[in-house]
Amino acid sequence: MSFIIEQLRDYPFIALFLSLGLGYLIGKIKIGKFELGGIAGSLLVAVALGQIGGIAISNEVKSIFFALFIFMVGYNGGPQFFSSFRLSSLTRLFASFVMTFVGLITVVLLSKWAGLDKGLAAGLAAGGLTQSAIIGTAGNAIDQLNLAPDVTSTLKTNVAVGYSITYIFGSLGPILMMSLIPMVMGWNITKEAKKLAEKMGAGSKQLNEGEFSALNRVSSRAYQVTANSMFVGKSVVELEEAFDADLTIEAIYRSHQDTESTLDLAKNPILAAGDKVYLTGLTQAFPKVTSLGIELGEFSEESNVVQTQQKVVLTNKKLAGITLRKLHDETNARIRRGVYITQLSRMGHDISTLPETELHIGDEITLVGQKEDIAKVIKKIGYNSPLPSVTDFVTMSFGMVLGYLIGEIGFTIGGSHIALGSGLGCLVSGLLVGYLRMRTPRLGSVNHGAANFMQTFGLAVFVAVVGINAGAPALTAIKENGVTLLLLGVLVTLIPQVLTFLFNYYVLKIKNPVEALAVIAGSRSANPAFASLLEKTQNSTPVPSFTMTYAVANIFLTLWGPIIINLITKIS
Image (spheres, rainbow, N blue to C red):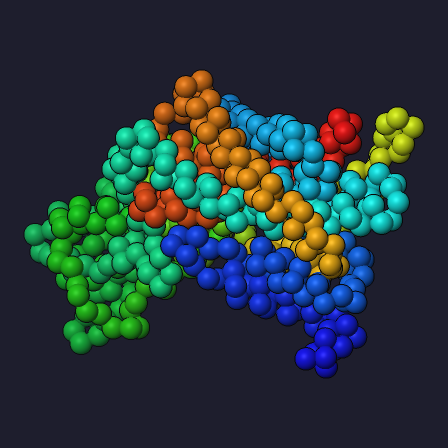
């Protein structure tokens, strides 16, 4: 045992990765619908390892990984954050801000009443409101107070302590609200979600891992033209016009004696009985094709239809806010010919391609069609989504430089100079670079997988270093304040949700049960609660309201870290 302890002291990065590995292992354990998560699990393991003593990891490591994390928070959320500021979204945006503001006031008042210091107050906010980024932004703010080193260390340890004690119920509380609110209001969420989906145009079941939709929005089929078909003697253009470009002819094969030849579609050939016609288009349009001929169940691999799939990021302001139905009806048939939308993704969440689904700036649209047809419409939509293997390190690096420079900006209060700090600086630069990436494709981008990895791994390393460096004082603080913090955490978790729901329902008139719950989950940045809601709705109708409010809440909750530190300092 002494050998292991010595190894951890001599090679502290072993302790770091041990914290991450064991933390994520513990975080996967489920009790009912509750799952601790890897971040909280890593912190708890790190605090436990820190009790060994003598394990120290440079604060520069912590700062670098937090800067990466917070920059990617802004970068990933930037497009959705800025695109949310539309008149049609103001009610939900205001509801999200109200939730975060009520959370801030609740934390400050309870901290003052209970006599918590600045560190514990910030930790109470980070755990009770489940916003891990507060640990970093509050820690930066504590550094700016120019306190004695031992006092600064104690306060930053207390931030981690407050978080670790209150986080569990902070995650569990919103999940409970997804069940308690419908029970009190007498709502059947599954039925309400079905009605909302019907209002939007159709339903879309939320899929679990390993499942897929067997019936797709777009499909390809083959038909043999019969002698009595109304389309015999009609041209390719006339056939496609008959279906309002909802179907596209991909190929026509004509038999001549024992051979089969392909007709040149560019010459607009005339259909004849016996022709084999290969079509691609909206599945809902195929029932009309019975007038063309008999559907073929088998065909050779050589005559199969090969399509191109391309993901495009929406940047065209003229398309923002319009529905898919309006996009279809108001777009010239020749422009949209041969190009079909198969999937929509917003902030990493798939959205049903329903007729009444609205498009937002930053949405990732999956198009299917022939390569040359897709190329014609991409510029009218936005720009190609980056390939999974491509990351623009120039964009990311200069964005980080900008963040550190912004962090040096400060102001003077009571004769003391207070800088924004690298945390807030990198958050702002991440928002700006994310927005500019959306507006200016030439700026480059960081692929979605890499951005999510840096965001998650950056935060995990940060909290693990905080926990390890906290050491023995963390256990002392837990013994002294554990019960008090646990009870305060319950109040911080529940009070903002209850008050904001009542405000949203009776004042802002957010009456639809699915949207009301999605706004609550999003305004708390509560992914576990959102997962619980999706399980109840059994479709993706909560996604638009959740993603919109989540982006706003994620930014404001992160900003509350230094504000809590400064407010507690003033009222202490």
